[in-house]
Image (tube, rainbow, N blue to C red; front, side, top):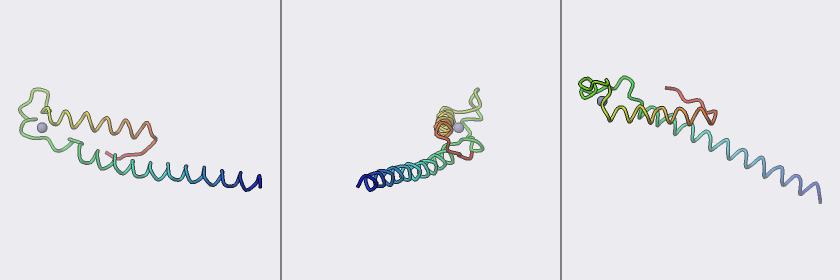
Length: 82
Ligand SMILES: [Zn+2]
């Protein structure tokens, strides 16, 4: 009886960890998509060309969010390509 309880607890824990790992895979894919969508590298616009800071406000915002996504991925140990 005691062993059955311990086995159930172990299986529940394995299930929880599996769910966490599966969620991390989904989160990693979402962050990868977000970086691909937001990363302004190579997609400068005419406003960027005219801006003294070399990036227009929209592309600065994209660059900031890209860095936030990469920082979040790094803090979670998720590899995201840029
Ligand atoms: Zn721009």
